[in-house]
Image (cartoon, rainbow over all chains, first blue to last red; front, side, top):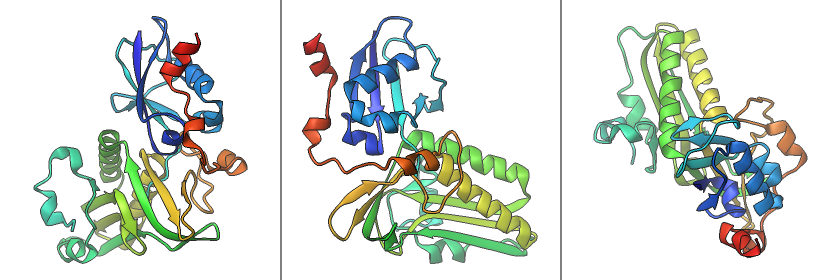
Length: 80
Length: 189
């Protein structure tokens, strides 16, 4: 299935801002993170501390994905 | 220039974020309530130094739809925790110059202790939880995304200052070398 990925802030230095990956059906966020770590191992120290959101809600890494989901990868925040 | 008066013209999706400069004078001038004995205005401003380096300006980016919702929830929780007669909160996005406001929170309560406590609680929650990021550009022309607060020891699932102190981000010199895009992977398989 196709999963859309959106990155923010420092992660845009390591990946495109938006792109798609193909995963097996029944894949979870864990599979997304595994794929991203393989795509660019230099980003691992940021990915390790990133949180994941789908449709404006934080999701657990065990969350199963659906075709076309937009998975947002959020590096540690620094607002204010 | 952002001011409360122009806020009413915005949609619900941009209640707490603005790309316009924030006018403290305009916000504060109308922030009075007959039952409030304590008014606190916090302005988080861009300082000209960070970790010993000279800062030229900051740029803020947000996952806007989610940030709006999260700030809204924080505001709702604050109203439940403290009896606030008035509450105002705005976070700036985009390029911000030295001494301009990045975040402004105003609280009005019957007594100063609630106004101070609520204000600090709201600012801390926003700084540590809401998906907003700042990029510093230094006077030497280099820039870096910030992933920790200077001197901050706060740690949560959203905010990991300790671990990231140990392995700071190195500036990316050759962008192409760092990209490994999905289509490249597919070609390899």
